[in-house]
Length: 202
Image (cartoon, rainbow, N blue to C red; front, side):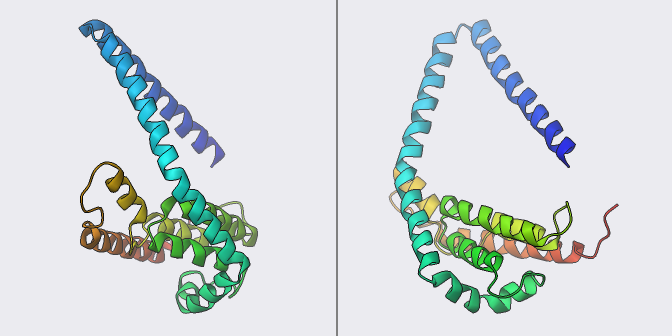
């Protein structure tokens, strides 16, 4: 597993390096070095502005999630979602730290808070890894990755924030499309994970 990750990282480094080198060569060949320099500076400036604009939302929701955890909201959510988590994560006992973190992560994803859900997802994966006696990801860990990646979003807050920032007059007019696509993606991912649970690894 570690060697595979190393190979992928090396391959990505080569790909990015080749793209940068090709851009420089093409700019020199076409006499557009000033445009390339301007594009690099504008891209870096836009990235910094985007990060700063999203920082407030991330801090606010991450803080609210932490308060909810300390205030016992996670325990309530874990009880409400227990029928669902029992079927999707049968190896996790009810009320365990892993289940609480999973429920908070699902809630954050339902609200479209992808960035705020990230620390909760990391916490959930750490708790799941503690329950896993092996060195490879077990079925619960795989299922959580699927649910977190193909998450159902009722309110796409993050996407709406981006659309509003870039001048959309109706940031939430994508709701029907988001509901349909996210529900289909989640259903397909969960079904695939369940069907492959019993497949033996070579």
